[in-house]
Length: 535
Image (tube, rainbow, N blue to C red):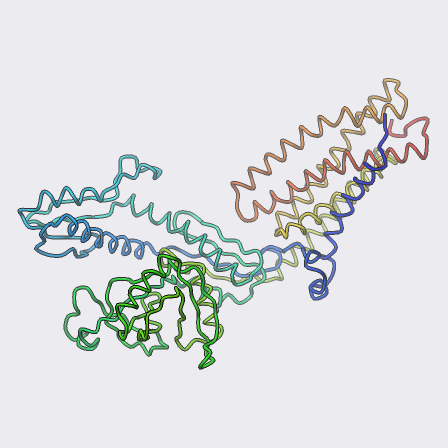
């Protein structure tokens, strides 16, 4: 029968009330909300299309990816031939898009066999069935030419984009920006959208730096000026200092002592002696061991801290550094030290990123969208209420109350999740109002059918709710599946629409069946109707 126990009724009302209360912070000024307890400060975040912000489109530098792959290939060729003790007439060098090495004629066949082991199949790459990572050519005269294939380069670019998306996400989140959207576009581009950020300059400085950190020993066999005039030793190279180091040239060993990948933490701090901003860092176990060994063996010798091919500091090793931690100083400001710490914590980008589009979206258009969205919501809700009241009378009023609670619950859940509301998200809420009313229509039409068969009002209402439930669940589950597909396979505004639609479906089932049934049950208990106006 149409009976709901007191504890069930209390649970239904409490659920609806709590969900609606989470929407309350959205109606108060942000300054006031910040003084509330932390759990009560959750609110809906407006997307880029509603509140404006920064829109940046980045592209992975394919030439940088190719250069890094050739450098890595050059090191691999040198290592493989050295381990196999194969004699060389000339060490590996980069020529164009290939690495060339000249092997002694007596060792040529063995050398070719070893080098062919570097070429790996690319079976996991879409469209590259049978392709390999390298083309190895015997050019005659002992010259062996190794060229990365195009499928291998495309695969490396794809990996670089995936890695960059993750690293950029860590960098932007470390800046404390709200709800950034970072997603890949096409094969080699990344779209970054940050709502509410009107000046993207600091963001560009953070995003544009590769942040490849290395620790390398300074070659003291000759002055850097002499190396510039002649030829530096084969295992060393000239690296210039940063602007803080007055672009001074340094002769550094190519061998990397420790890389930034072995850092576990980096924090801005102040030097206790000079009170200047610095960056403190910590290595993992492997990095700490290597750093301790090198500093023990090279006391009194300078070493360089290199960031993005620029020497930012070149201190002298006064004593072994055994604790796995240290500090970087380089005439930093407080802001630059903080930015460097963010970059080092997030990790180095696998390749350079180029800004190909940058714009600031004004809040005026977003505010206009909000106002039009409100107008559409109010107008649509008013038409729905009029239709339901005219068609179903008092039961239409019950349905309208349930729809109002439904909308409040949607905003409350969105606030609880700190979800981002976009213009398509507003459209999803408007659509939810129609879906919610549709569920009530199914119930009321079923009640009408039961009344026409001669049932009493109470039994007709009970049968109408019970028998319409299966139909309501079927229709809403299929819509929810569609929303889930949009969420997992869509991006940006499409996901915003999917979120509001999915939440709206869950709240619709709750309000259209459970809450409306509670309201009708209370009305029946109070009014004891002999006939239903709905029929």
